[in-house]
Image (cartoon, rainbow, N blue to C red; front, side):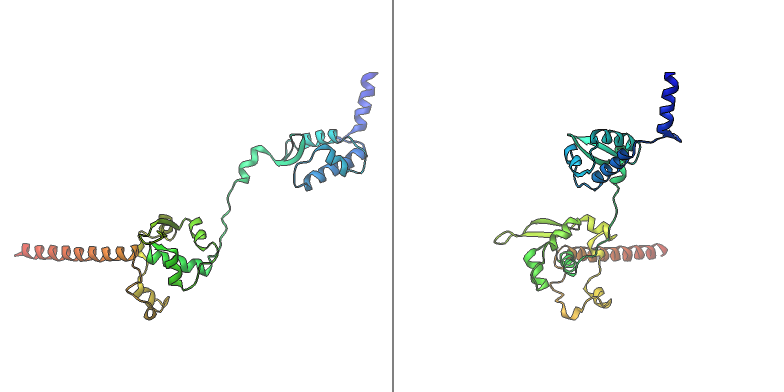
Length: 239
């Protein structure tokens, strides 16, 4: 008799294996769910209760919602008596995936980078002097955040200003083996990128770039001498 009564009650509550809660509780669950979803921060039970029109047992609703969401992509969690929706812990790695966002450098940043490339190591004042205008906000800082530019010692002049130079990451990003792989003043002028008649070649590239170019010229001279000697020796061998 007891089993038969219990079975009838269960049949009333179930239909197609879905538990049918009383209508007021279903509506209450929807309200609690909506309040938690829209909240900018975790909420305690009293705060949730104050936002619901009907007089319902918020704690029981929260417990049921917690069970319902336990196997889903988001879970309902309670921390320090405050409730909120969180990404399921076993899916947290998905949220840490990085997305590359392309951003264009400002004209000021490009000009500053170019000056540092060809005149490094160079101070902030020297960059401003070459550009003819004062620095914009965070121009150098942006280049340093990209890890293309770094501080490189201080200039031995009054005030000991910081000097700036390019990094290995700059070379890697632009697929360069060394600074001297960059075009020189003549090549830039030929390509129409600058008006080299308006550029003082005696100061253009006076830093590391210029030194690398000079070393490259020396290497070429020695290479030419080696080739010449090798050619002479081969000629002598024939005689």
